[in-house]
Image (spheres, one colour):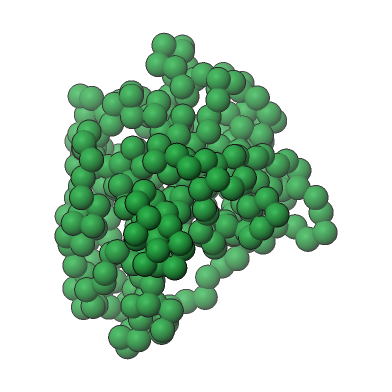
Length: 310
C-alpha cells in the first residue's frame, strides 16, 4: 500500500535488557509464584515472559528514567504533519514470536528496526499511525519478534490524508460463556510500577496530562492490560510455556482508571492454525461492571491446559 509516509524507515534503535529487567516486567504484569520460571533467575528454566520485547521501543538501552515526550517526538515522518505526542493513545498491537529472546542481552547486539506501514486521517477524531517494529540481532540479522502497532493522535486529523483500510475484527463467540476468566485487581500504584519497564509517559503518572485529555487524572498503560491478558491466555491454555504462544494481539477500546478490577474472558475457537497444533484463541478485557477495555483479542496458542509444564 502506498500513501504519505508509507515505507519510511526510522533509524535503528539499539536495545538491551538485563535479567533484572525481565524479572521486573513479569512481576509488573501480575505473574505470581506459581510461575517461578518467569520470576526467579535461578530457576532451571528461567526465561523472559514472551511479550517482553513490546517494551523495548520505549526502553532502548536505558537503566534510568527518560523524557518521554522528547524521545517520542524526535523523528518526524516525511510527508505528514508533525503530530503532538502529548495527545497520543495506543490503538492496536499485534506481536508475532519468531524466536525466544535470551534472559539477558549481555554480550549481544540487538536493535529495533521500525518502518511506517500507514498514516490514516480519521477526520476530526484524529490520525492513526501504523508501524512495524522488529527485534533483530544486529550481528546475525535474525528476527526475534515482529510487532505491528498503531498510535491514535487525538484531535489531529483533517489534514487531507487517506482514510485507511477497514480493520479486521475478531469478536468472541456469541452466546457462549468464556472457557476461562482471570481477574486482575489494579491499584493506585499499578501504572507507577509498570512504567519502570521503560514506558515513562506522564499520562500514567501525574494528574495533569490525564485531566487535559478528559480522563480526570492518570490512566493505566494500555499495554499493561494487553500484557496481563497475554499472561492469562498463556497460563490458562499454554501451560505457561512461551513456546506455546505464536501470536498475540488486541485493540485498545477504553481507558483504565487505577483501582478498577480487570477481567480477561477467554474463548477457544477450535480453529487450527498451521500444522504444529496451534489454535486460535479469542479474548476481551473488561472492567468489572463496566466497559470493555480491550477488544479484537486474538492469540495463536498451542493448547496444553493450565499450570506450568516447565
